[in-house]
Amino acid sequence: MSNLNSTDERGSWGSRVGFLLAAAGSAIGLGNVWKFPYLCGEYGGAVFIFTYIAILVLVGFTIMLTELILGRHSHQGPVGAYRAIKKRWSWVGIIGILASYLILTYYSVIGGWIIKYIVSAFTGNFNTTDIDALGNIFTTFIGKPFEPLIYHAIFITLTLGIVMGGIQGGIEKASKMMMPALFIILFVVVIRAVTLPGASAGLEYMLKPDWSKFGIKVIIAALVQVFFSLSLGMGVIITYGSYLDKNEKLTTSSVQIPLMDSAAALLSAFAVLPAVFALGYNPSAGPGLLFITLPGVFAKMPMGSLFGSMFFIFVLFAALSSSISLLEAAVTYCVDEHGWKRKNATIVLAAVAFLIGVPSSLANGPLFSEITFINGMNFFDSISFLAENLLLPLSAFMLSIFVGWVWGTDKALKEATNNGTVKFGLAGMWAFSIKYLAPIGIGFILIQNIIALF
Image 1 (cartoon, rainbow, N blue to C red):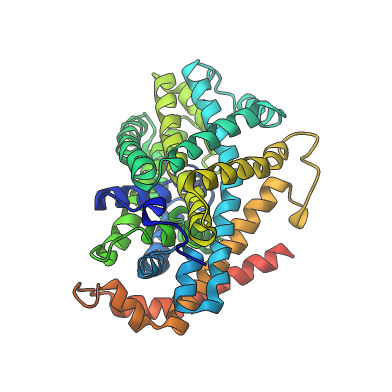
Image 2: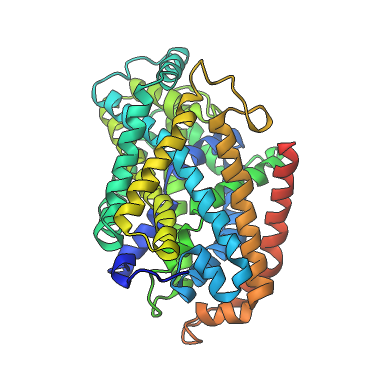
């Protein structure tokens, strides 16, 4: 049962600013600085950006507000939040927690790669502009059996240390430091990127849409990106919302968090793509854009070692701000539902996440890359597909059905408006979206992903 532990054990936010920075930090992660720029490059630049923004407004805002409503209404994690309204629906909360925890296991592996690249940037190892050579450097590193695991362990330990500090002393304190630093570093790198000779081609690619490239693949990629980037369907926002008091204006927060997240995503694209175009690289390099193409960009760029170091420190901050929220969702579940002490829950869950991440790391090596699971994918890609393409949309789909049709939009809006004391001009749009637009859109994408699975 829930509420087995004291309020002190569970924790609460110390300030509204702390909550906003922590929630924005959860949203601002590798989805922004790694996936968003390469998806822009892969799916037509401005076409993807405009599609992403449209889905963000119509669906992202709706689900963000809905999760905050559930969390604050119950002051419990995802499982308890559903159970507090309809006991038989508590299983939906487990889907979100499972999704976020599985993401953490391979997210930490990538986080370890980032730490390695900070070290490489500081030591001046980005000294070649040859893409093939850079690709070999990256694949050789991730194919090693032990070195990536060491960096994986370092990243999960950093995450553990922050979460163990609690809501105010750990997550809120770290977010107040990392978020301002993140944006300052990002602004510096953006200014350098857009002032490079030839950067205008990259700016045009990002701002002038070629609608002939628009299609269902762009829509699916944009929707998955919205959920991954905003931490929707993971139980994270419900968890963070559960620490809010009844005076918080949820309708305002549910706009501010996506705005900060989108600003980071767009700035990341402006930091990456103009530089890629200016220095003659391929913008549609896919996931290799961060670890293969960008080191070549920094090698060509004046003062490249400095800007490379700054950029990868920024990426580390973004990754950590999200990983702590992924771990926190599972920790809150153990504290709320099973009465664990925060310290014990954090250590155990971080250790298990590291162990599950081991085969994800080894999947990139020659001995394990041929071992396949879902649809011929290796372990790393299989866990990623399961969490991002199946569990996240399933969790969000069930959330929209639950709030729109089981609990009811009137009761949810009463919570959203603090019992009618807060004006919410978009109440009608939100209610329509959570009842019809969100479940239809998310359900369509979920069906498409299931078809792709087989």
